[in-house]
Length: 167
Image 1 (spheres, rainbow, N blue to C red):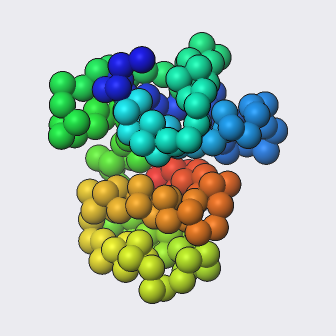
Image 2: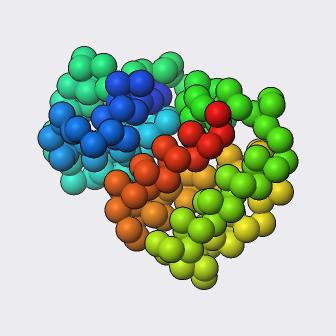
Image 3: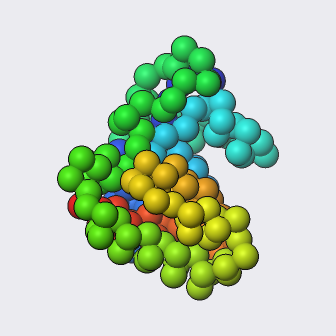
């Protein structure tokens, strides 16, 4: 498999992560969670170096429609394509009001505070956010911290609620 191939969750993959009725085995769900809203196959391999069957499981997820290949990137330093961002956040971006953003940011801060504490770098960076671009830039770090410190399920819960609030 091409290491630069960009992978992203589909709507079916999002539903698998955010709904209570899970159909995938735990290892497949872990890969699906790691793929998130965009990652190259090479980055996924680095995240999961001890997963011997990673390529086969990624192919299973592709064929089952839980993830999709976006396109190959010319170099890893290029920004991720717009399609790899959360569709709800990307769609809401043009019409986002300052008050709505502040409400969502406050939710994120409260969620982080409850699960990882106020001394976390993710909490500090979210506290410094002043605009939508900054908010979207800090979100992936927040999800990763929550997944590592609390659980992937709680990170997915936060991601779903933020996406809901941003629409």
